[in-house]
Image (cartoon, rainbow, N blue to C red; front, side, top):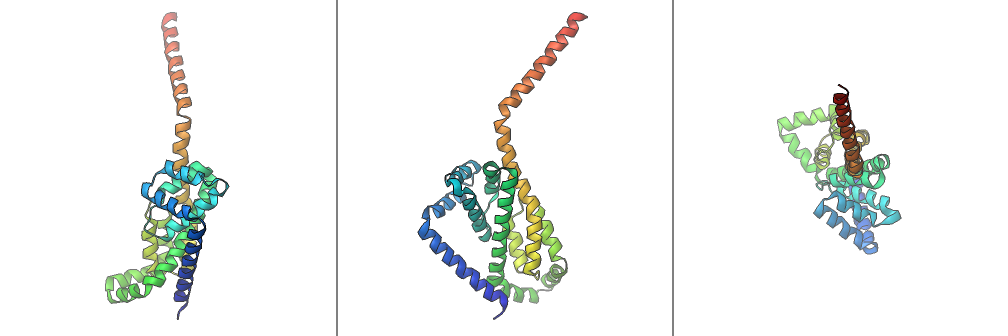
Length: 225
């Protein structure tokens, strides 16, 4: 049995064990995750995660890992919520770490579950075989660039990488580097939206005051003339 199959079986066993223990210990967390995915709303996500109080950061990290492990589930709303909950810097670090762990686990699972079948199909197709050879040479660069782009479906990149020739180490390094700028953008957009709303009244007053001063100054100029 090769190493990828061993690692895949270990990960599946650990995920099953962790899920069973987690559900038996804190079943409300799993219900909250289902609600978050159902509504996919930033404000609702903030409300749910805040309800865990001092454990909010741990819960947020765990949810991001879970969603990225599942590959097909969206997490854009969660990353925006991170900016609101933890600020731009800390929110980016937690989101980046969670996404990196999640997609790395997903990569290993997909390679273990579908890697063998994918390899057989690729070897039979000339075009796919040539593209696969390119991934062996330029895979790190391709994954790095793809991970750097915000809002690109992370699961799709992970799935394509898992059935390619790129090694786990190269995929991990490309993800660690590439996920940081994309997480920064997605988290900061959530933070900026809230900051904009908080300071909207002050900004409105400032603009109105500036307009008033300008109008009065123009009237004064006309009076002097």
